[in-house]
Image (cartoon, rainbow, N blue to C red; front, side, top):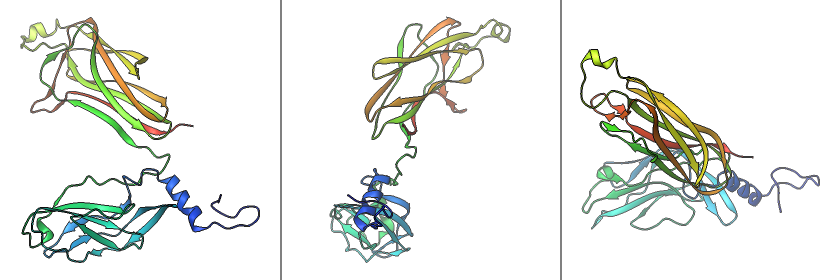
Length: 282
């Protein structure tokens, strides 16, 4: 066992204790090791330039925070064929390039750059990695899943149908928010004279929010002739660690026939559903 800080017997923290604390604070470091900085860019020679930063390197005892100053790597060989160069930081804080090979396990990967055969500089390298940042335990994980449907004029059914399905995985018990958004109007696809526009009445749609096949909440959302962005959603659901699915069902329940719209030169919102992480649940 160990601790962070002096215990009652004045036993101090040893490095291995601190490494376990770091690992617990940043549980996603294996896929998102960068804390800050670490931008990579090609140069006019065969080296890569990088900005200063800090990140996490994994070891058998836990995580180690490493820092580095801005600089450039050692030159890499010219590639005979297309090659993926992985720029990474090791335990010693040195920035290196794994040219066509994998970096050591637990390395803090800064970027992955593709060089084509015969390249004489790294300036032509193209990025092939979506950089992930280290996320502290308890912080929001942001959007867990999002479903976007740009569309043109289309009616909303008067029977139940699935508006959206969202799948996500959380590593701890979390609180989540669920939102659904769309532009809906009672204005039909075919244009009407202004005198008939006033005859278009309002209406409403019913949304049902299901979590893992269980109905959690329902709500009615009104609409009228205006191309208004309508929102429905649920707040602060608690979910346990693991994989979950949210299904949002919808139907028109009353009044005029709704028409949904998205895109066009005015870039109307179309349909969108998303699940957001609020934070760790107690």
